[in-house]
Length: 234
Image (tube, rainbow, N blue to C red; front, side, top):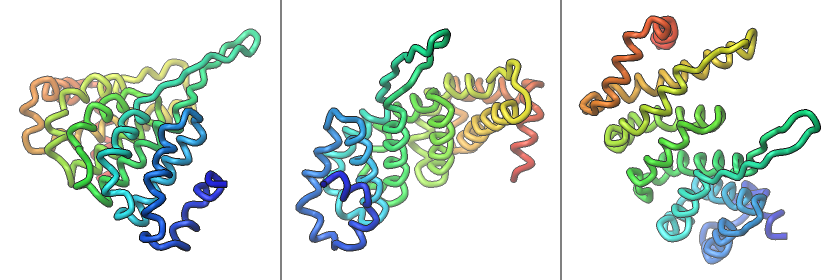
């Protein structure tokens, strides 16, 4: 089936030339608009693989077919409650789609940045910084990588990063111990790395809200050990 073929994307791209695949790409990309979440996810993986292996296949289709879906899917939330007797568990069926959409964006930044409207994606990045742990950490990596290649949109959006970053770097440890506590500490340090990286960009500290946030954290005794640990990594 089509989905089975697309699920083995590396084989598809190695067996067929871009010229052979190009006529089919608009049809394949239509799968991004399917209701079935599994189909959407496979379509995102197809786009990721295409951008990684043969970006010329999709560059011309970015504006009309790919970017609108990436923006939408990177923000899609589909939480549902599962009743487990005395407990209730929340499942977010859209989480894999958000992670896959951000992976596509990150790969486009590397392989075909000129095909992106990076400033238009900054609100999506700000929202992802407030997402669940996995998405936050993924977004931290994206922002840090952008600092060297695309600093101007980051500087323009710096104030919008303050609320989610402040929440992350002030994570409460609660009753956690051992590996769970270490995980919280690593999460905090990841947020601090983003703060430090953005603060070093030319013009970033001219954003009043962001500059005040950086000052608060730098002057906070509880953040001192974390900041030192991040500094020691260099």
